[in-house]
Image (cartoon, rainbow, N blue to C red; front, side, top):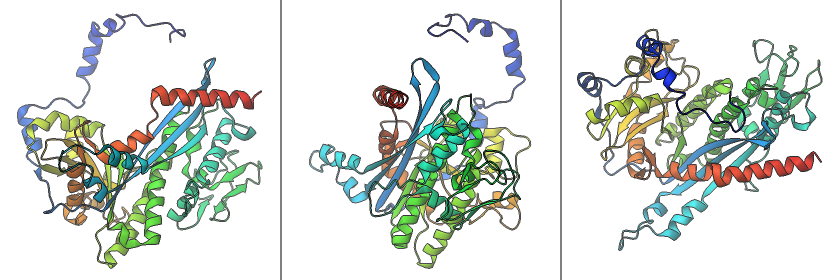
Length: 466
């Protein structure tokens, strides 16, 4: 490790470049490589024409979300002592307003109408203790982090709106109104502070209890296990990332539930777009099964009303799938699509000789597709699985087969393709307008946004400590 301010030598990489051990090591590794022309043509041969509505089957409203985080030192003299900031933005686009953006006489975008789209953005912020910071005089960084997570998720983030937006309530609703941290579970049955075995049951009216052994508070949000990635001395960036991931999907569930409770028919006129896969990773991954179940229940009700299933689209801009498609893109004609079934993924992308019986079994609640639009842009998108759970005929292997059966998705694939075509954007690679707008309002730029957060953090903490 260099000293503070010390720069690395310009030729430091040469020791690796000239070292034959590096080349020998790479020769013994299997990894994603540029396919030969024959291999790429074989891969591309299984793509089929992408479905398209005539006219396009577009929603009346689109809600897009994106999230970002920043870990900020409280002082230049204490770079390892940090505060975490998370920002999630939702943008509502009314399709009729979007259609009026371009003046039919000049073909230029009306700047005033474009500004109105930005006014529909609703950012939600969360602040958490990072490394070496104890919140509310907790006995450890981890306990302070648990307290902060509960405070943030149990707070009403509706900003005075008519409807409450409390994510701890959403978490309980996704679990049927009750969460138990019981002795039967190897992880959940332990007090998160002292590891004593006790049973803690939470309901909407009781979301906090005390441990009989250590007296520390135990919260309903401990069910997410976000604190397990927190260290009293190390970098807690991973915990912030898991928190951001969980919050983004909880907010999606909360918004969908609010619309469903008010008017289920309205959901058939809406589309929800989230930046990233329809999956939840790390300690809170079990939340994905609750998301899948709730979406399945809502779709069952919409089917009873003779309405289209709920359209949720997850878009991945980067990752191994996008890396793979970039290698074969020139062999793909425009306007084609392929379901990314497990066999294809394992054979061409993962290179796994012993794959699991169901990719994403512990994390995903949506199926991935590869789509090359008629204008030649590549998208990796996902729509929710058309099942209420992964226990299909008692076998995860059977579920892995059925989830790749495109006929089970009804209109979802066609509607997702129509939506992407309608909003595809020239400004960035594999971009669509709603996500670009959401990212603009969710992103925390290094300058000036990150600098402002630095100033706020250092000023407020220095005052509290004086």
